[in-house]
Length: 192
Image (cartoon, rainbow, N blue to C red):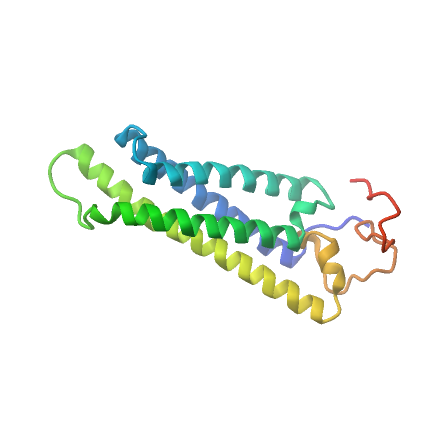
């Protein structure tokens, strides 16, 4: 039986695509800010480096989840860990960068177009890095909460399959490809 994306999976993929888009905006803004500063200040480099890392991780997670039926990167325990760690990194880097950017005025000064554009880019970057942190934190929290609630309802198979293909009524009856029938992992993983 080939499993497609479930309603839970469609929401999960939608949130990851939103994260992907927000991360691309952060990458573009941080590149513009760094070009103006000639890649000098660490506070400007942190969002650039973290957005590149985040983009790589999200690309791998999305690609594997879309192409592999039983991707480990789509399982809740993996996603909760990745999103929680990225949330912590975004919080730490945002706190450092925002403290460095506190001297940039909220209303950009009139004058040189380059300085005004840089000021607007920094203000937009300031907003988007915190939006990205918020999305990562909420995604980790909601995924954790959903996983715990499903597990307490007796749906222990939630930890053995990707969230994109999770259905609460699927149980370990030995007929599904994603289920490992051995408690001690004596049998090989199913083929993709």
